[in-house]
Image (tube, rainbow, N blue to C red; front, side, top):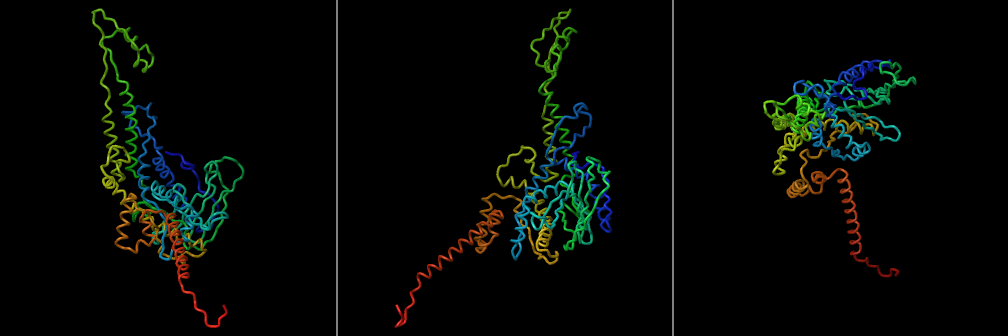
Length: 483
């Protein structure tokens, strides 16, 4: 299991003498975080390829159980789906320039990709919206994985009841600051160092707290949840028990294959009818490799005139190992709905259509995930606007819609063909930003294109006005007017 900064540390809950109800909320969130810490670290280990070999003890001897074998399939299961979720900005009937500017200040496009990966690895990730400090955006958007955050769920309101994040750690990886997110305030629980150097977290006794009120009307923390249901509103990990089991079997098979390849490269030899002296001559090289590549070995006839028989056992076949590994890859692909070609390069597609057909199941999962994340993103967007405007959340407009690129990742030629046909059917569509979006242009590219379009239109209007002024007849002067 991967060792995080505090993944395997037995920590006691900090005692900051919080007032109620914050004390109870903090203890409850802390217990949720502490109880799931090891499980989340384990799934992260599978994602990083740091899971240990689970040896059965039959084909792999214990002295070779430490042989390193890494199978990166859990990372593939996460990354292949994450690639299908690309946030391209936000829209609103009255315009979303303010919101998109806030998100650009926070670098949220890249931050969403990281949040999405953590969401898939652990089942959920978190984003918080707070007022920024000096030098930070006015509305500060931060992301946390489930390794560094937890929450309790309000089933009646179907949202977070309160949330907790590990906001800072010391150089030894021990948490030094927690933040508790309540509907009316943010409670900061911070460690007071006594200057004693490295000590165990359980010995930290001095903690203090501060309460910062806000007017959001709900906790300013929102989870991104993957594969949730009624009983598990906070979702499931993409790295399921089945994924971990198949990966464990693939690791064992990788070790067996490595051992078999050693025997295949050095076939076993035998000597029948040899004397003790012949054995000494055969092994005089000293090492197995020297025995295998030994130059010339002389053998004499025995007392009956017979010559020892020297031979070689058949070479070990690697085919059963490769076939079983391919079977495991197919089993993994069926469990995660990712193309088998992403795991082993054993399939050649005859056309782009056949390759896309193999991705259809994954695209459907991505579409559902994007729909689920859209609700969290819309809530996040409204909270960011509320903080930026310094108003309660209920005074922020609704109807904000996140815009995702197509999960199917069509080619540029396919996008161009589609938008050409649509604009031919609906000519007015060519004048909208939707046409640029569907053509595959990013938000920054659309902003530049629309800006250039407005500049060109303004220049054209000025030119038309100048031409109209030049073409207008000079007004006639009345009789007697001074020349």
